[in-house]
Image (cartoon, rainbow, N blue to C red):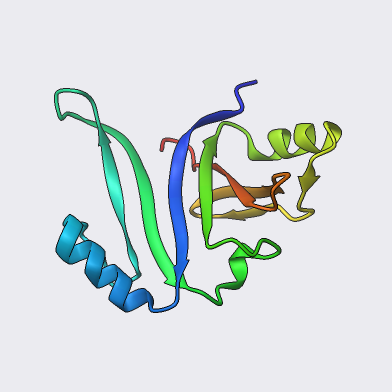
Length: 128
């Protein structure tokens, strides 16, 4: 089984999310949307879309979705089978969260690395 197949998103917390979003918009040209981030569409070396996206988002520093980690970032990794990988990681002795979440956005599972960083495993919906 493949484990990680790519990066689905990069999320980080800020003391002043609006100001930081504006900085990235102004100085780096990132098209920050009202929800606090953007979706970068994937393309091949010729610029032809390939059907995937990577989310980039800034949120408030009190965002509970980072817990139990106290870091200011979270990386979301694309995986082929979130449930199977979470179980395999648990068998390998990793600190895997008990819950698995399923929604129209896909299937999500979480593991905490040895440094205390919460890692998100994301299985995209079929066809994405």
